[in-house]
Length: 142
Ligand SMILES: Cc1cc2nc3c(=O)[nH]c(=O)nc-3n(C[C@H](O)[C@H](O)[C@H](O)COP(=O)(O)O)c2cc1C
Image 1 (tube, rainbow, N blue to C red):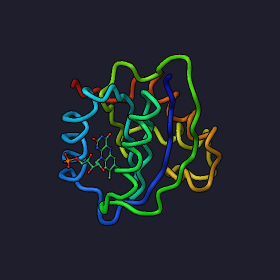
Image 2 (image 1 turned 180 degrees about the horizontal axis):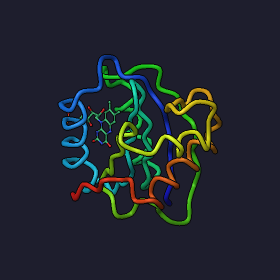
Image 3 (image 1 turned 180 degrees about the vertical axis):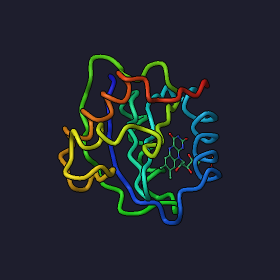
Image 4 (image 1 turned 90 degrees about the vertical axis):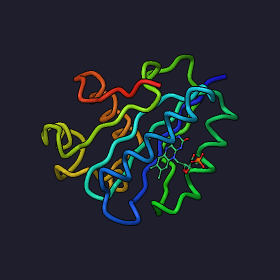
């Protein structure tokens, strides 16, 4: 059984290239063997990540991620059983929102900044779907 989980968090410190690379390195190391796919979005000091895969695998990874000291204020935005994956091609895709068109953010929120704390989980999911549709996502092969 497949589930999709979406959460948001705030980085404990500045979001540097090194932090993103170390998270992606861990994702590439663990996600394929665990059957996890998804994407990691970041903008300002905010992370937003969608994880999909088997229920046990996703729940266990989310438990590890919540305890990770590189971020705080982890909020579950959306969780559901799904018939199929949306991010099947990505071990962990990444989107740097500083490099995307601000109108994409404005479409779903009051200001052109990533603020999943201020909008509904549905709006955040819609933003992610639009990012995939417009290919603003950088795939990272497993
Ligand atoms: C925002 C964020 C996203 C993360 N995403 C993943 C992920 O998709 N897969 C993963 O294995 N670890 C991810 N991690 C890292 C885990 O929290 C944890 O540090 C890691 O799985 C431990 O693996 P290791 O001890 O083998 O290095 C993420 C951490 C953060 C802060």
